[in-house]
Image 1 (cartoon, rainbow over the protein chains, first blue to last red):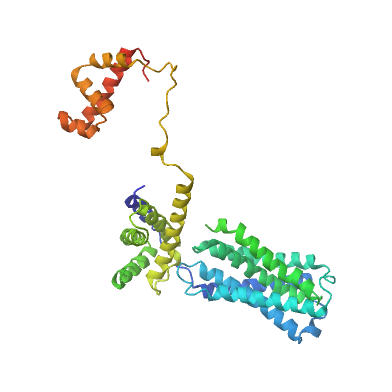
Image 2: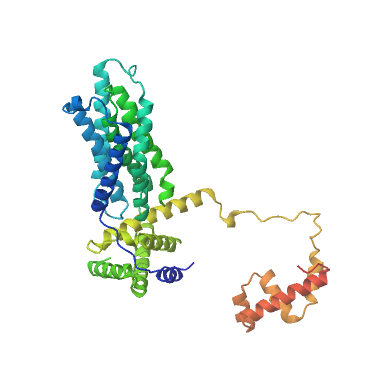
Length: 209
Length: 182
């Protein structure tokens, strides 16, 4: 097909379109929905019985903040990546990886300090599944939002979207799971964010085209 | 794309987002030229500059709702263009790595005992039996490898007349050689 014919064909489809809101606004909308899903998850599975006891614990607060940060920063990065030319620097992607690294290192340090390795990591698969379940609706919503935009780096965009959604799941599970063992948290809380993020990067990217 | 062109493109895109087909045509024409120029500057005069331009236009069309009129147009457009150029470049490299151009394939040889093989003397005799104009056209095209254009210029015939004469000559040759009409 000649370029002139293509131009004529595209121009014939020049219907009015509503420009998308900025990635920041879309992130705020998504965050509201994702946090609501997290809250529903906490209500559905029940909050941990020792929530009041651990609420002031610095480790609890730090790990919760990291999970929330991973969710928000990764989702924001995916929304920015879905707008051509909007990513001025890779700082959001770097921040996601850095937060993820801090989370993993903190848990590994706690495992080493505990001296029991993975021996005490029980029932992690329950949390793994719950994280996936709570993060499912935020993931689908984010995927739809990305489809409406125009992601150019499909692998990065889909992986960050999956990590963002699972980060919200991990944040919710922080308020559900009463187990304080670091090995359990590594496998059951951080594990799905890593695994589903990686899988999302490979499987969902073709659907974003 | 200079600052003036960028401002113009931005204004055209905002109008295109409102459904203005004329503005959209003007914008896409401008972007196609810019895409070809950009790709030529980076890749040289490759035969698939149009592919880069067309892939870019398709993505611009799909992504047009993501353009924010308050933002500069060039980063938005060149992000799309550079990504599509990389995609086309990868595709072309893949094709050139896996495919063999037809020119280097050997000519298929007809087996010696093939029933389709004909005696060259019979072909020459059949050619001699054709009307002079048909003989001249068939000989020029098939024996001397002249092009239709060259034959039409030399014999003072239109190109379509050369083709029609050649076609009639081939049919007459088949008949003279006792071959079925294809």
